[in-house]
Image (cartoon, rainbow, N blue to C red; front, side, top):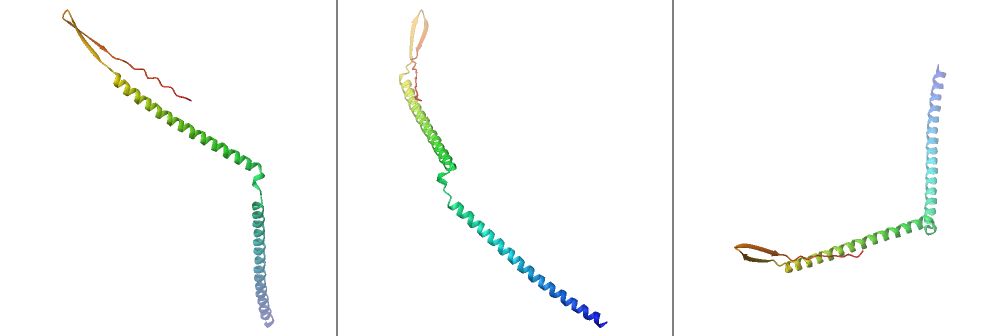
Length: 139
């Protein structure tokens, strides 16, 4: 019986040794895999950085399209700004003309009432002078 108990002790010892060796090997395996992954990511990032930093954008079609669309936008905004300024100027000129015309009309309005007595009837005649306002705008 003692041989059986001794064999069990040897087996347990052997199994424990194998488990500790397996754990150590597993640890070294994961360290190697992690190191290799870090190395791959590092060189991939370096390659990407060097390609992007050494790329010359001035010779590409995208750069030409970008510059042309930028110029088109600037031209559109500039023409819109000019149109808005012209509209404001036209509004101010129109306001000024209307103010002048109203002042002139107020000064020129004359109301004349004449009363004539004929056969005991009273006739009243009223005269109004009218002013025509003509405005022209350039486009």
